Length: 255
Image (cartoon, rainbow, N blue to C red; front, top):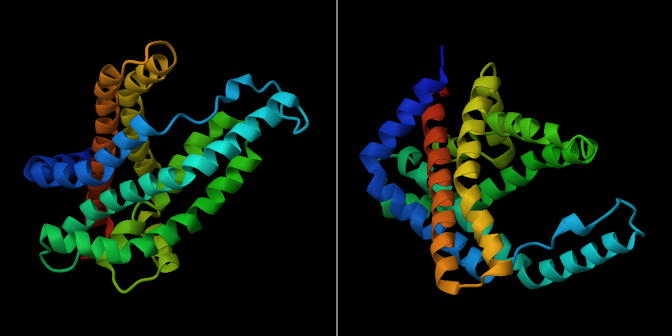
């Protein structure tokens, strides 16, 4: 079938215009609030700009690794919980549209929660080649982002497949996504890149101001306002990606 980015954007926008109260409620609870708590309560990762080389015996590298291990020990579990909450929120939005029958918001949330372990397992599986590519291309970082977009384009329909093609396992869902996205990789990669880049550019000023304030002007009220906008961009990005998944699934899956 002929598929264009404008078609996916139009379908996603129609979903947003029709259902934005429900979408903002789900994204607000499971993406916005955890992300805001992370920004307000968890310090940034240790600054890697002080590292002067890649030699493990380099003093600056050793100091960085020590600081990183301390950060993971103190905040790693919190960070993981926020990531899982965001994954669940995006998955729940997809479930509102693709769970069997005509699900209520409550039943869609329950279905997404029951199937979340399957999505997590599938994500771990498909992220393995991304990690391998990162290790291979560590000296060519400008290639990692496009490769990430291409991999994400081929796995874009994993979540929808888990919800709409039940019963299906994690690996089978990845296979289903690869089958349905065959021939549309570059198109879907461009859509994915546009959503990711739009979220990044929207959040960048707020994140930069937050980092500056943390170092030079620690005003808790002003920082809370800035972090609220940064968390809002994360919630909007997750909502947009979920709507893109739904639109792509409906266009590419068999009727």
